[in-house]
Image (cartoon, rainbow over all chains, first blue to last red):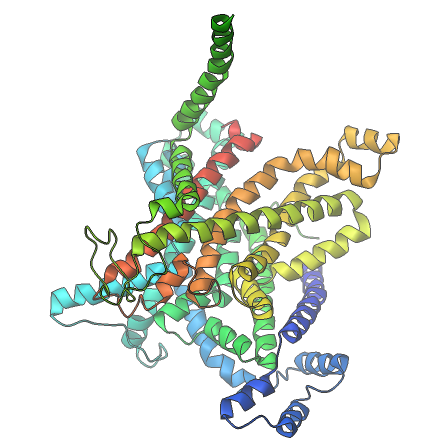
Length: 323
Length: 298
């Protein structure tokens, strides 16, 4: 097991290095650079000297491989540098956004698990009955519905609902408050995006639970359990469910990792300062260092989640031995 | 002569037509959800093809006299904040959505097919390196990849297609590769190799046809995803640009500010996206159930 863990961690290095190469050169393929944008923002007439000076300060005129080496080298020793756009240290800029994204991702994941697993089991246990059709339609609708539209509908519903009930429209708070400072205010703001994204992901997990359950319910030991006269709900809950959970765990893990970086659109709807929004802004500003740091963060979270999921497998299914 | 010819014609014609109709009915009975999805897809395609006939207004015509008119006889689904007919814009939007959806999924899955089969066929070092590259591409969420592509290529329908196609390639390649790995071990591939066929011929004539099922499943799954991605990018203002009618764009253009006073501006385009993706997903599920022999036995 220890060997396996070491091997997996070592195998992450080439992938991370590849991701670093990819994002580094992708960013530099984008026409224009941060200095041009910064100077354009000041409104002054174009000054080639200022441009060169700015580029020199940021090291943009150094040989490209040298730029990559200094950036990647800094990364290795935990120096993520400063944002090219704001000049602030990247760690402090990312920290606040990370909190928001992490909380929404956790809440959405919990929400989707609570919905998905019971619904998926019901759907599989009552396959091809109206229960199954309702669950499937509900989950396919969840996949089909853009989460930003669901977000707009939620805001609309809140506005109209509060207008009708209290006589004045209510909107979720706009300023982020950490949960340990004011839990009520924090929840009032973040519960809606978590619901909007959670519904979508519950749909993915429901479908996976259903198909995994269907597969397991055809196994020999389920037939044996039926033959010896066990009650159906015992068969489903005790014999089938545990074995059906493996692929579901994978989906939930991938989903969580995705939520950490992929909330771009939902954040836009609810006007949240999360990682996704920061990513869009930093790409737009040609903020190389910030974009690179964010991409590496997302890639790391992805790989790490996959790793945890694999370890979780071995715990769920003792037959799986990693060597 | 004429009558007998006519008789022969009808006999020849009617027989297959009835079986085709029966096949449709059979599918509707066995896959009611899939058939419903098929109908939605068909409606979308008709809307896209005959947009100029169906739409009562020019989707880009700004009408200063008719801002945010509620749905009614003049504007079936209301008008937006610039007085444009929401229904006409949705009909034309279907054109954009389906165009982006079909092109990016077919090209993305096609490229993934060739790469995936090739990787499985050659195996060894090529396969290993290829898999690592795919890993790198897959370690980003789809939307992040698409955003990076948009930043490089810019906005507009053609650029959006590129931005959506590229992240699809590794996703299809991975699935196709795993099927192709077992096909490679088949005796007929060995036979083809022993006759001395070229690599390209073995890949295209002997392996590709045998991984068609996962390939088609990926395509149908991609169309819905592509429509969603296009809508998301357009909503962010990074996709299709005005004045091209696109569903995501309709939601961006102030749908939130007008949400309370003119909810139809926000509701109907989103409904169109949801229905389209819903239809393609239902249809895709039915296709998967029919093509995947493991599931068919259920």
